[in-house]
Image (cartoon, rainbow, N blue to C red):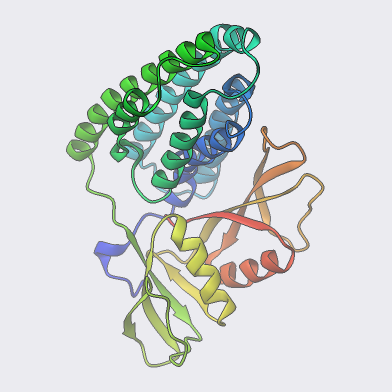
Length: 320
C-alpha cells in the first residue's frame, strides 16, 4: 500500500501516456533550435507527424501489455492534441515548402527581422510549455509585438511580408485554438497538479534540500515523503536526490515502472539491461537519437547515476 495520500497519486499508465504530450514539447524545441539560423521550410514537419503517431502506438502497446487501466479520457485528450498537431504540421509543411521556399529563394538568404523574432517566440514558447500548459501561452502578445516592434518596410520586402503573413496567421489561429482548449480542459479535467509526491529511502537529513523540494514527513526509518516539482524540474531534482544517495521507493503512488527518455549519439547502446521501449532519430540533428527506457521505480536513482556517468542527456522523466 502506498504511503502517499490518495489525492496525490496518479495512475501508473500515465507515465507512458504522457509521452505524446511531451513529444509536443520536444518537437517545438527542435523547431526553435533549427529556426535560430535556418529557414522554417527546413523543419521536417511530416517526419515529426510520423514520430508522434508511432510513439503513441508504442506507449499504448506497453500500456496494454502491462495490463494497466484503459484510461479512455486520457486517450481522448491525446487523440485531440495529436490530431490537431497533425493538421497544423501538414498545413505548415505545405505552406513552407511552397510560398515559404519561394520567398526564401527570391530573398538574399539572410534572416529577416520577422524570422529572428519568430525564432525568439518559438524558444519562449518552448521554455513556457516545459512548465505550464501550452494553451496558457500569450500568443496575442507575440502578435502585438510582431506588428508594433518590427518595421513593415525594410530590406528583402517580399520575404518580410511573407514571413509577417505566416507568423500572423500562426499566432491568430493558435490564440483562438488555445482559448477553446482552455475552456474545454477546465470543463472536462481537473486542474493539473504542479507537484509530485515521492517516498525515498536512505534520506540524509543533514543535506539541505533544494528550495523546490519539501520534506513532507520523516518516516523514522531512513525513509521520507518528499514533495517535488513536476514536469521538467522533476528530472533535475531526481538527479540531485540520486547523487545524494537517495533511492526512490514510490513516485506518485507507483512502485512499478517509469518512462525515461535520453538523447544520445546514434552509436549509443546501453551498458545495462534497461528495457528500451523505442528509439527515434532526432531529425533536425543527424547523429543523435532519443531512446525511451522503461525503468523500475526502485532502480531509477541508480539508472540516473549510470546515465550521468555515461554522459547521456536525460531529456525527461515522465512522472505520471
